Length: 282
Image (cartoon, rainbow, N blue to C red; front, side):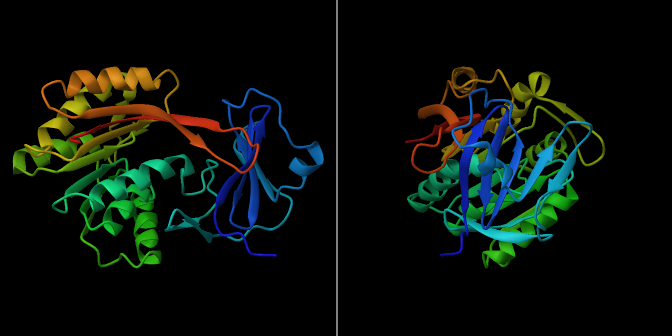
């Protein structure tokens, strides 16, 4: 049998999702999966590991998992490692955004400067760098920035023009404006709630508009794109489209909004996993 090296959604339902990360099958909570699973219980019971939030966050392993392993998603290699919060180091629903970012930069007349905010393990950073962009990668977590740098090395991009920053997003953006720095493209995936590198509080319902205004001020006069993705319930594609339309009303361009989904093979239901909106100058 050919060794599995990528990601796939196997099934979903009853508030859970059943996924493959390379060779390993993992079950995790998923509030969007309100339908019934398609696979039989015995197939779910055969998963290698399950993460549950019942009685506190905990993993149960039916077989021994390695501390870390790698998978390839759309040409990008990621380190996978189970965390205490049920994360594994990748949000596979972003795959279509990574592909769009890569292709848009690849087709640009000039290679752009890209700012990636709330950058997590670096999928966007690596997609942009592979296409030839100069990237500033920012996250408030020192550990996640280190993880992203590991991913860069796995993709032979350790010498690419990537600036690695651990900082609070809004404070960093204020400093960039004072410095006069500008970017041709900005990508942000803000959390519903988060803390900066020094304990600063971020609440999306209170801070998103200000954050987008900061981003707009940092765009070059003829920017390439601004991409916002979101995992907060209630922030639908129409909601994000309305926000972006107001924000970019004075710039000519195209706005596209939609759902991000986890995808599997054959008849597997697509699993909604967030929303996105993109403004681009095309």
